[in-house]
Length: 465
View 1 (cartoon, rainbow, N blue to C red):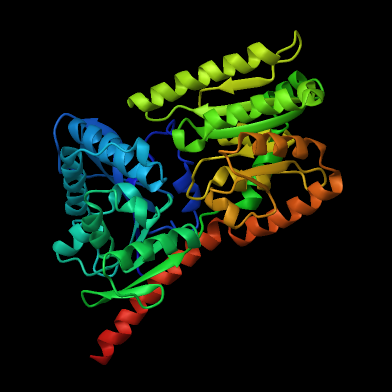
View 2 (cartoon, rainbow, N blue to C red; view 1 turned 90 degrees about the vertical axis):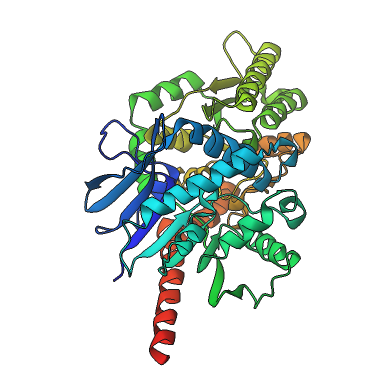
């Protein structure tokens, strides 16, 4: 079987035992990265000048190859075009977009740099699987270097509606670059439809969910990212026995726990979430001492002014809520701005009565899936989920809310707190079934099967010729 080569912006540092390895992508790809696979990308290190040096390591039979980024490229490619232009635009927040031609040029150059390094590592029969918005141009750069391997691309964030995508000055160039792939994968049917509609707006002729481009058939597929349900459930069961979980339970003094866990990012809707909680406390005074809200917000891209401003805004809102509603033995909002490990979060999810997941827009949101997996099916918590998260398309039995509707979210919190055991069990059983159906293994097999079918079809056509 052909070797799978995964390409992503970041690669786990397997040479450093203290480095975290269980990021979202690593968890999602666990079933695809079998011994013999290669994972290629940025090391996470910055150097003064660009370097073509490739570092290689191996762990559990999987090879890891990385390059460093020049400090100027990190600022322009990563903090700049990737996260100040593409990130807000693809999340359909155009007022947050900052476009700079020089940053886009750096983005192109870094994608070329990835391709120049990767081509040295490829075998003729490798299957290449490129991930996410930072690397939209790598496949086209590989094709220009004569690479004929089957190449797939997976977008982990939403694809915007055509009217939003049209705001991107180099939008057509990036769109054409995506067509250098053989398979393009999306989280939801809506994202796929947005992409296909954008192609039609640019004059491309489609054949259903595919199109022919420069002699190749380019397929689009929908394969939602998932989690290993049983593994996370076991992690949660073990975690509630830990000292940290017992301390939280004791501190609640019999009150229900509502939890949110996010990166500190404006797409997660944290200011609106805090406002909704404040509205809940104001409108439902009988509930005030019955619940404590824990918001875990891991720092993210702190070099960017907008993210620092977000942290200041949340500090102020948290202070206002606690100042208005706290009692001498009750703090309504606990706001933690440091990363929490997966075992600790798993335990917190299991003991919580409500999981509040309300991004303004999200590709999938694995926290929602993990919350479902962590629950005790005999006495499960309630998931409140933004209808603008990709997870809403496969978890409709959650309490779906519009995160912009402050009163609507407040009412959902009240409903979750008063929901009876039978309804909670029924909803959780349905959610758990969907989480199992769309787990990490299904995601990996779904996409790699599409890529291998593409390879098999190409081989058959070559044999006929």
